[in-house]
Length: 198
Image (cartoon, rainbow, N blue to C red; front, side, top):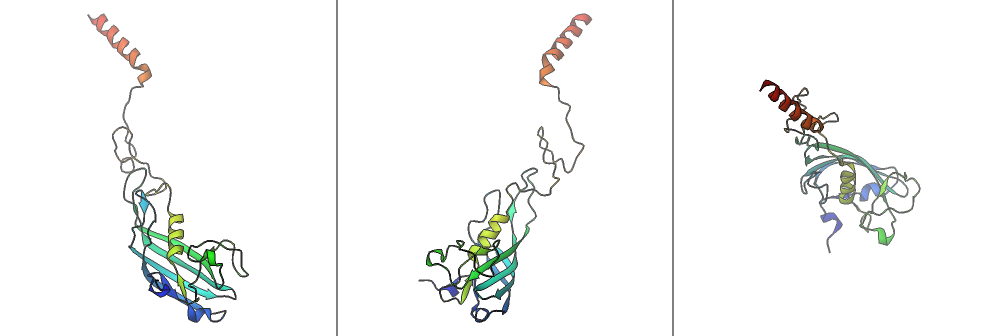
């Protein structure tokens, strides 16, 4: 059976959990968990995620406030340019000292505990309360922050539907296209002009 401390995302919190009012700063690089994103936009499993923040102890558990910085891969859904790889997301989570047995290890939310903000996600500590595992927190926060329609910038003009030219580089680009509804009239006009000349 794997030990909690052997996890790549484990943080020792035994000292800070010993008494309310203590704080432990965190500055660490961990591998990105699996399952973040898809072929359009995502974070490669195992790539570096820089986590900074602090664990603060209260009566009922630990509150973690921090940030995660990672590199995303993907392309703009309008112009197909690669996205800016720098991605940052705010982290906030509550690690209660006592958590129902059926909620351990799966990040399920439990009833609100004194001192816990309703907007915070709830994650279990190890069974002995000595370690907090950030894997589920990172996966949840990063997945939730990824855009459904990633753009290189909000005002991206995309590609020309006629020839595929990048409209960001040439905003005045256009094509003179005859409305197909008038194509028959154009043909009739050309035929009459030929007959008049003939």
